[in-house]
Image (cartoon, rainbow, N blue to C red; front, side):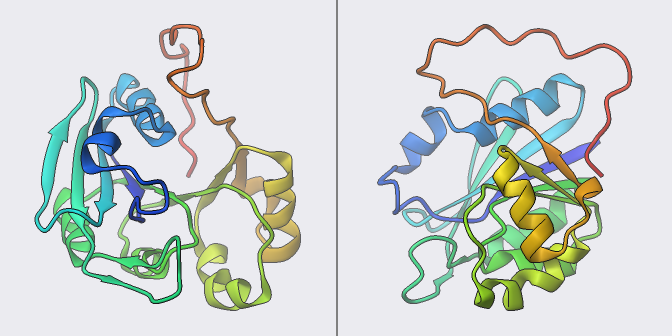
Length: 196
């Protein structure tokens, strides 16, 4: 199965350069690697404000495309980035599943509307404001399923956004790569349920 992991935001908020994004640990790379180890063709799509044309890279398990940001919503510190290259790359890759990290972005409604594959959205939590619910609510309700790392995020999706609890899956975020962690074990045996 072709799986697209999409991080629809730039990195100015973190101060990470393109090299940092490619070389440092980020949980999205961890999730992409786990999916690849299950036998899926995985591509990670990232945006970065310092590039003007698509940069392609590979890890031992997944392809990475770093795409330019074409426009930015004023006064939006995180999630206000827009990229036509992202839309074109997704269309070209033709994913059979899209794992969208961070629904609070201007790209989310576009990808939700233009998609031709099931959509899993990663919700990192935080209180949903009324304006967000008006803007993103219809798209959230059409999203196939959600990944949350905390019970509070699950409650927020159910209570404030009206998402059915049966469409929300708890998956703890992995520890940072710099942390002392056990080596990843082989993928679980038996049937694996994709979140869609």
